[in-house]
Image: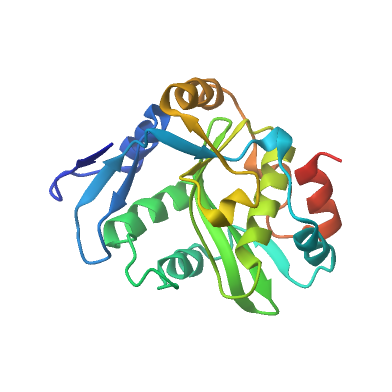
Length: 224
């Protein structure tokens, strides 16, 4: 379900967090359209943190430590990457209002990034919102093979270490199904959401500025 909000209505970071707690989130039609839509899917995408699995080939890549992964260093770089055109999508839903809203949440410490670097080059990453023991993934991107998947594995490792209970992906894509994503009904999702947002978790249970080695990230993410 989607409802169109007036471009004149002010959506503050506080309003946005309350919306997440109710199971809805905003999107825009395009980068040029100032209007935001409130979205509440009938089927919600999630990644179960306690049964997370990854393909063996990806695990081998992560163990090589080819890429350096850190968090919360370059929000602007990550959201720019997420807004880039990609095969099959020439337009982005990330408009200026989205950038400002999530930028404000980032400054408050409620929005986080996971960044993947090859040397000094940002080659992949993701951003999302934490609330209680829930993490709401917003968008991800890659400029190098597997970089966005590596970011997601490191995110899962961090969420498990910090005691999170829910990883919301909004929708399920072919990209995410290789990483345990599945759909739940709106009713089931709201039960999971209520339990998670009233809990507590710590995104900073692991350092954000010190790269987490691939072997340790895999161990945490897979619960080995």
